[in-house]
Length: 142
Image 1: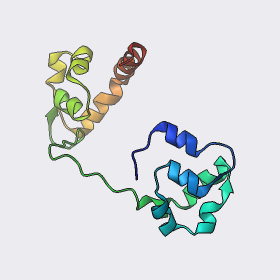
Image 2 (image 1 turned 120 degrees about the horizontal axis):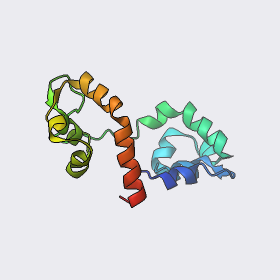
Image 3 (image 1 turned 180 degrees about the vertical axis):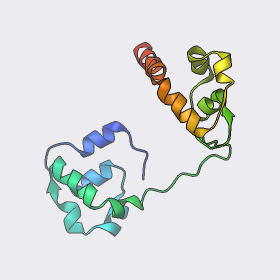
Image 4 (image 1 turned 60 degrees about the vertical axis):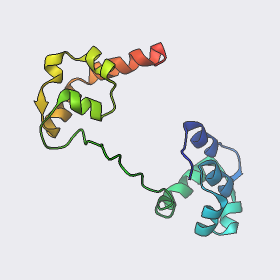
């Protein structure tokens, strides 16, 4: 199955009669994969978006096993692990860039050592700061 982008999902949920097979193909399921899971008659059935959404809900278990799990990188660190770690290290583990981290928090804050629950509380208490940074990045185009 291919990596999905939002435009694929929107295209798969277009509100005009389209076959289930074509909608599944738009979502990245190959004809071979779909043919192994559903009859040709079902795949040829033309449905509107709402019926296709219901089809996906009803067949989520059947479809889910076609999406392979991605392995975590060897250097993966769980930012919410129980052991103590600094705020800076945990934010880096979340994928926040160093420049953005330093723009939002001073060194003293970044050097604070927290456990996973404390870090989660830290995120919640500072959500306005994170949302402000996201808004700033969005208005600047990155």
